[in-house]
Amino acid sequence: GMMFVRSLDLHNNLITVIPKEIKAMRRLQVLRISHNLLSLVPGEMGKMTALVALNLSGNRIVDFPEHMSSLRNLTTLDIRRNEFKMIPDCIENYTALKILQAGHNKIKTISSVLGECKMLEQLWMQ
Image (cartoon, rainbow, N blue to C red; front, side, top):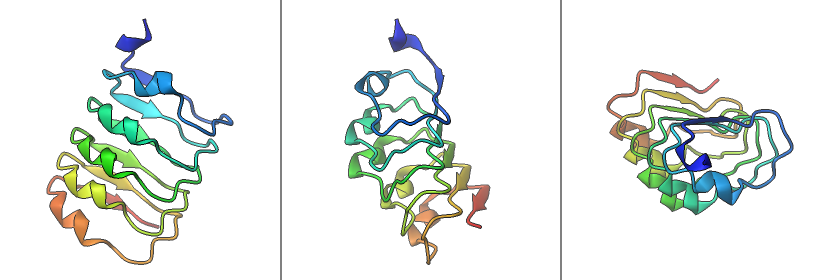
């Protein structure tokens, strides 16, 4: 069934809430849910610990819940074109993160949490 899906692309729809079926996909490695109408990221997404690439660009997200801290395997995170006012604190736990795209938000300062991302190779803030 859907439990074994590794990659899921829901780009460019009218999704307002991440469906519980997606949150149950514990083996999912790549999730692209960009260009939708999301304003909240559910805490249960923190259980999706197999994720290595997460694209949430082009939504209305303001922040990440604390539970997102457990996504330690993420290497690529795209949160461009949202409503973030700061880089989410939980990113300091993403020790495998290589690429962070965070441009076109309302971020005014570069957070010290990025200092914990020792593997970071590319940071896009424009």
